[in-house]
Amino acid sequence: MATGLFAGKVCLVTGSTQGVGQASAMMMAEEGASGLVICGRQQDAGERVRAALEQLGTPAIFVGADLARVEDCFAVVDAAEARFGRVDVVANVAGLTDRGSIEDTDVATYDRLFAVNTRAPFFIIQRSVPLMRRAGGGAIVNVISIAAHGGAPIISAYVASKAALIGLTKNVAHALRRDHIRVNGLNMGWTATPGEERIQRTAHARGDDWLEEISRAQPFGRLLEPREIARAICFLASSESAIVTGSVMDFDQTVIGAYD
Image 1: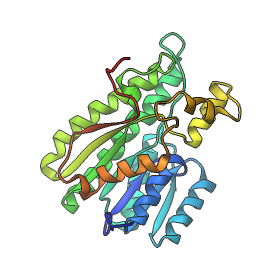
Image 2: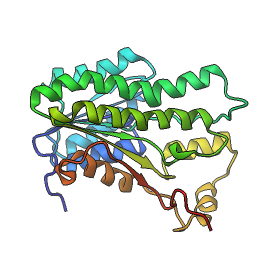
Image 3: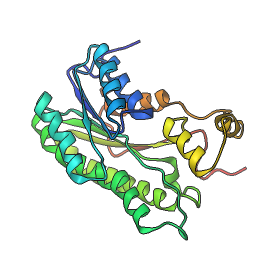
Image 4: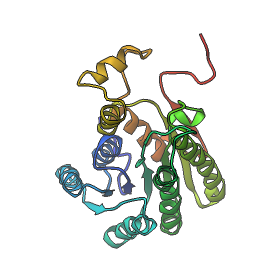
């Protein structure tokens, strides 16, 4: 049942044309957000999500953006200010999961992963801070990854980019605490998203039963769902998490450091 957690709040959600980002934006609208800014590279998908948000009664804009470009990161925040005059919540959900080990990752892949996974949140936060400070506070949630603890050998650069985001989350939380701007992170576990399906089919050549095959090996017999992750994001972005800042939550069905 909706409780109006985001009533009066303008929320900016990156990576919001599908998967966890879309689920998060929809949940914020359901919880009474007064405005939503979504962004992504897929114009048609972005317009569909924008229309769905407005059907829930939430004014929304879609900004076409490639977050590997710093100018696009700035443009998303600038569009939020131009349309709504403020930003109260930022959820940095967008991310790339390109494969590559320490032995075979090329420079272009490394740079692309860090550009989207680490640099984009940095500069979106940078651009948003003056707006939040002017409003008397705000909340930022960085979606990280359980793989930031170490991860698989085939995702070395991805792991490095997400581990860097943990450090950024804690540093910025400390820097902004007296501005009443909270910054927290969510180490997202393995989740059944359109992006995950794409990577499983293209990078791992899995077939139509990829989800069932992977799910059977998981402790709870399934992967996480986007709305489960969205619920955790909304918790960290709302008054439900009170004055919590600098926290990075592991959201997964495995326990880091535990062994059978």
